[in-house]
Length: 285
Image (cartoon, rainbow, N blue to C red):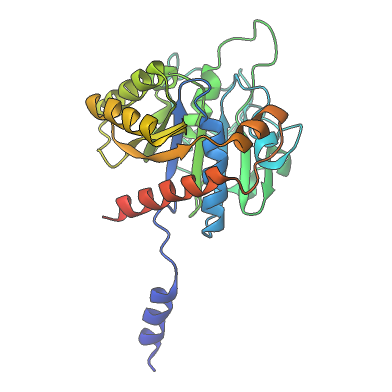
């Protein structure tokens, strides 16, 4: 057998990794379950063989993702410190210039980060998942979380990993341009009127950015019945919001969030897996 033939067979035998290098933002109304969705999706992508980078970009969530994902009381050291703190990193509205390393003028968007250059205290790694934390609001009067938004926007890591980004509730991050460097936007939608309005607004803002219909999706969450699912789908359709799938109400997920313990093999994981597989199929069409 020729060398070229062996190479072709090897390529055919390798699993398709359509999300390699992709950055996905997960947003939504406060309490809709976006952080839970990030945890579920990270677990699924890891089981599919991806190296998963999770970026906790929610400065207002004091517990962060470390507890939900790994059962840890304390998250990693904030990336804000790695990039020089508020003296070096300014709000993207006040200073739209791209994020840079402390001693380098070249933007990270042009010279992406390498995990090897980041000290171990700035991330937690377990079972193929790396968790980074942009930073948290710690002190009274310390200022807005705009500088953290710049890191969330521009912290791009080279390689074939998939990056899942958890942002603060609402839509303020769009005003700061956090979505500028992402490939897919997922808006978690629970059974509330406010959640539908946010999904509609996210869709419209994403279209304004130039993202196509295969890049912006709503995920129905905390759905308690098929009838409720039907009502939610109808409402989203009326608002011209594409739906990717449904995660039905899972009391075990609710209890885990209440007790602050990591997620296990809950029923919701099966629903989330169907959503990931549909997204996987959609981006390959």
